[in-house]
Length: 220
Length: 93
Image 1 (cartoon, rainbow over the protein chains, first blue to last red):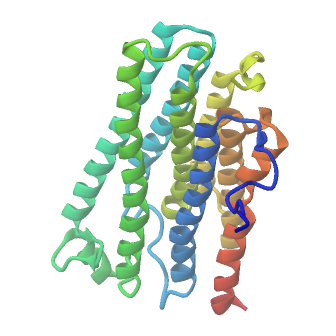
Image 2: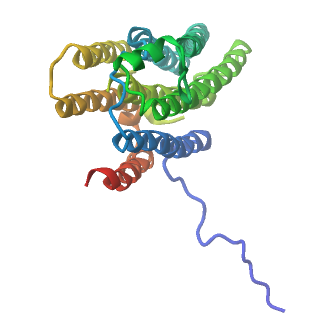
Image 3: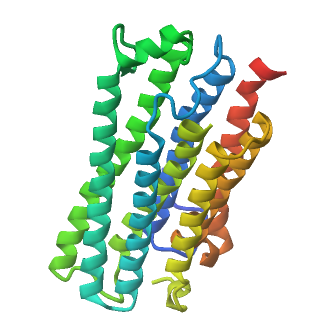
């Protein structure tokens, strides 16, 4: 009986993108994340364009100065992350730990401010389902400052997009804490800094998504 | 490790300052300018894409990576654009 080697590859394995597996895997994961956030942002754009009335003007419901500060904080965390990466490439363990800790603090503060923002918005009457009756924002609706017809879509899209982003930041902070503890044990060096680079890619991507979200959710 | 990272590091603080200034410009354009609605939208999206590109090119080091990885990273973008454009036609055209 003839043997057929069905699992034999047609050619020898070769280098593809010229990067190590973890980094390639992260880039492929980030590609899927682009499509995930596109689905959210795309749905938001489509719901907004097709909404049965005007959208809430920017700054009426959402607190722009606080969120602008949060945006600044996330940009700072990206710089500290890339400085951590540069430090370990140069073999500087102390700076690696310092910059990783700075990134964790910035990321955790971002999430903290977002939780504060949510609590404040809910207190003012802005819910995922729309505007709560008898609330401060309901008075704006009664005065005609805030459109009532689109409040429900506004609430659901706002909380879905920023909520999923906040979840990503939280996951990033947790992973970063793990990387930080590994760095404390001397787990990275100038010849092997894979974990730092891979978590860095994820972190910058989360920053990049926020840059887009900040513009289309808060400023437009 | 990748050869690209053996080169001198880019000036990350300059990129940070660049992003900071662009964020201020963005907020100023959104609230202080009196541009027509469509032009305002275009300006804000342009500034956001500019900032996002800076992060991808310098912080994610795409500027210093090989072409194959750049293609891999850019591959979802046209798909994302097509996805939004294809459905938005339901309301606009």
